[in-house]
Amino acid sequence: IYDCAMSPQEWPSVLQDIAHASGAFGAMIFDCEWRGATERVALRYCSAVYDTALVGWYVETHNAPEVCDQGRFAQLSSLGDEVNLIRCDDLYPSRAELESKANMQAMMQFGVHYRAGALLSKDSAAMDRFALQFRKEQGPIAEPARLLAQSFLPHVAKALSIGRAFQENKEQTQALARTLEAVPFGIGVIKAAGDILYANAEFRALCDEFRLMRSAKAVLRVETLPLAMQSLLRSARDHGKFGARPLREAAFLPGRIESTGLFIEISPI
Image (cartoon, rainbow, N blue to C red; front, side):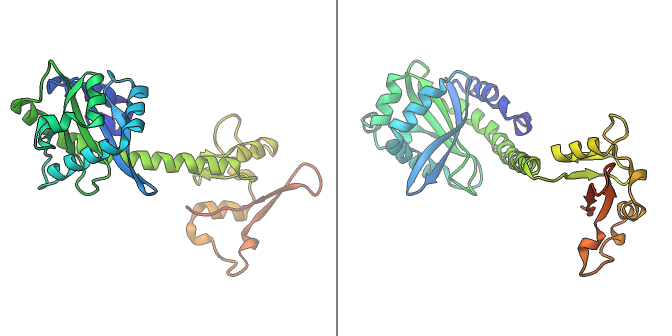
């Protein structure tokens, strides 16, 4: 389960294992998010046995009654801090009333006759909903299986929470990388000795043009930089000496052709 925090592509097989251990056909993790004035079900992960296109059609076609059912699941599951896995037969006063709903009729046509659902985040009920689904021959979830599934779900909840932080960081990093690749000047992150930790395409091109790299290695030839710049690499205390004239700290590195060259700024991170 915890491997999924770093590798979300593992969720389909892990969810299938949880479903199998619970006597279910499959398992899903989804959100109930607001898009404008409409609350919508949004699938995040599901067992490998599902046809995601069919799941998408179901959600699009039966969103309103499904949101209503999920509201009932959430209400019943919301008590206390523990994970409460709720049977679908507890949503309405009778099984007949449950089966009269359009979304339930559609699910039964697909072979799903019973469900169980739970909130995996009681800090934000809009996200991390969990569901098990059962075929008619499997019947509703038995009490021992329900308790077993509930013993897994706190770990699923924690892995989802950790994974979200990693995913947000990954998305921010990717967005930053796209931005840095698009700017019309070179940007690099380097160590004092010249080791290049990050360089955008323009930085690499300028290093090549002005022969600032040590052979093919990702190392800047610091000794070719003006002495003033070398001192800027040693300590953050060497920065800011020009006070309110910060542009004077930029160094000019002449090129091989007269009146050409590079202006180079160095900043501590």
